[in-house]
Length: 306
Ligand code: 13P
Ligand code: SF4
Image (cartoon, rainbow, N blue to C red; front, side, top):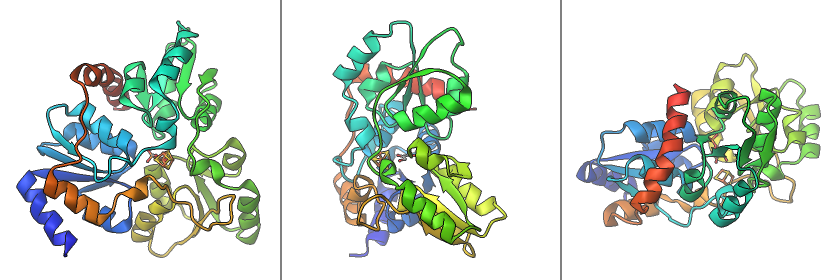
């Protein structure tokens, strides 16, 4: 079957927009209407006039699109596409954690469930976390969840003390500092660009730190010709397209495997994308009261990001 042609046909039939994250496989990125980082995709979901949103990313991203569009059909090719950060921050445990700090202002990373978002004061993504934390009233302690590494990075950038939920990303936490340093020695002319979900020891070597979109822009704009890229390998597709002459070296993880791919993101395939559009499912469903509670901190993030 020609998936590209069938997906294009179904897109018209459904009046759909296809949003894809940079970690999706390249064929999916190439067929999407918009490819972006978590913030750009949430902004696109907030603005779209399409009646159906097909979200090629992970569950929390599609759920955020649903929070912003409770009356629209939001499809995710594989509902099992979770995220270690979101999955390891269960709402009950988070509620108990939050109860210990009754005066805290809660900043939650978008990589969290709708139930955790509903208990938060503002949401952030990796591209705007510093900006969000900077806006928190100075007299309030900050509780940051669920990524401890992003939290530590933001605390350092803003000078704000933060109470951190001890979560991490299974992809970004396994980059090896030792192997990164070896690569830097082999390629002294390379610029190191890294995602803030990496551990502090890895980030300490980075020349530039940012969200996936910011890393892509940096590679395109930097005068350097060679880059060591410390994030999920899916981003290399857009980097190669937008900076064709530049040399890109994927940083190795701390295991025998040469890969650094998010197993959740890679659950989506062209076939599942076609099937979800054909069958109008799996679709994101959220209780209306939960969606309404989670909307306030998401909207606050979008307003503070302008
Ligand atoms: P970005 O917002 O930088 O795209 O990050 C999303 C993510 O899940 C990174 O692992
Ligand atoms: Fe979650 Fe990490 Fe995958 Fe991003 S790369 S979706 S943070 S598990």
